[in-house]
Length: 167
Image (cartoon, rainbow, N blue to C red; front, side, top):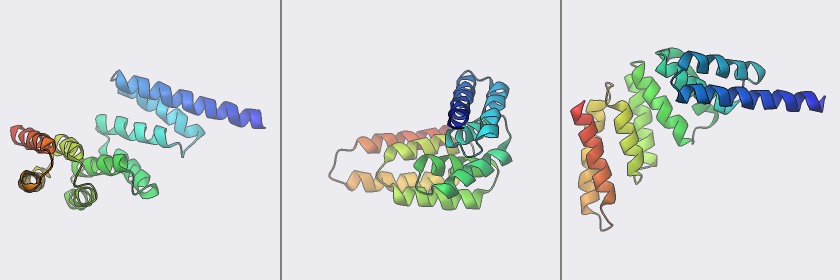
């Protein structure tokens, strides 16, 4: 019995890896098929679920992707990757109020990490949250300029504003 479960786990990991490879190659239909195979064997496999949600979002299957992201976030509410992906998916499905609440939660918990702001700016630039994110970033620039630490984060935040403006 142990041998069967080990073999099953190996197949789950192999299918997930195949799906991730196809995703990287932008062969999204193949990626979806392999990731669903992995989840058929182990419906709770987190990497397969996250990779499937990423694939579905790129395939424009936004609702299903959003549900997967939100389920992952519910299981691990402190996971920053799940928070960012869920915010992006919510914005893509025009659930802007939910996305804005999550965005505010992310920014309030991680105000010092300008790289997170840049990633959010790049992800949300083509959504309805752009108008909300710009004033937040400008406020952080003003706050950052007043700080006594090195202003490397100022450059990152400024670039995030630039990304939002050009789209």
